[in-house]
Length: 243
Image (cartoon, rainbow, N blue to C red; front, side, top):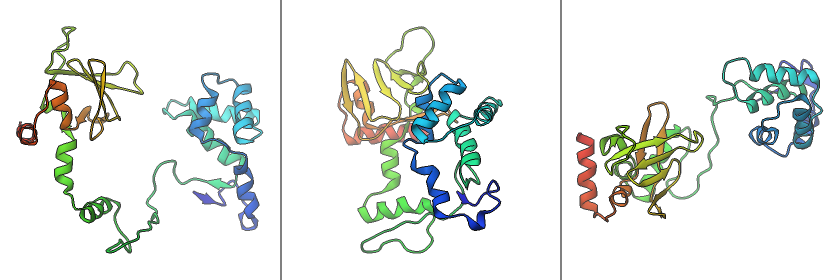
């Protein structure tokens, strides 16, 4: 975030009120605003929601810019387009990126052997694991098992055998991993079988870029309908890792 963007040529005289005033009427994030707008992308509705939830009196030109950016074929979301245009036209706040940047992020740590100085973000998990006395590699192998290495993909015969799986994308926003008659909603720690929901020790992870799905080791016993001990779990995991 930058204060005194190219849209504010007189930024040297910008006051705190200039920066804060447009933000005071904002009651929702841009994602929440997009939800309120819904599927009605008429100029009237977008103006109404911007006024209601952000206190912004958008012009016809603002709406035209938003819709042009949203429909330019680059796959940008509506909330991105709204943020871009409203920031530029109604605030003195600019953005170098709408994603992550390389800026340092402040971190406060208290207690013995706390973190100090510049620390790479990937080192934080290792530090916490050390202080709490557990092994991250062992934890990963317990919580994240590649489904492909344990089960076979659905063969498409219309019946999901107990050793087959498929990723049900009927609702693309909420995929569900199905293994036999067990259902595991992605991004949750729930396994549903025979109408009973079981709480898992870890969550089901889906990586769209690779198409991979990972489940906690604990889920294997529930899928098979039997409880298996730690030794058996480790044997299954090791077999998967060498497969």
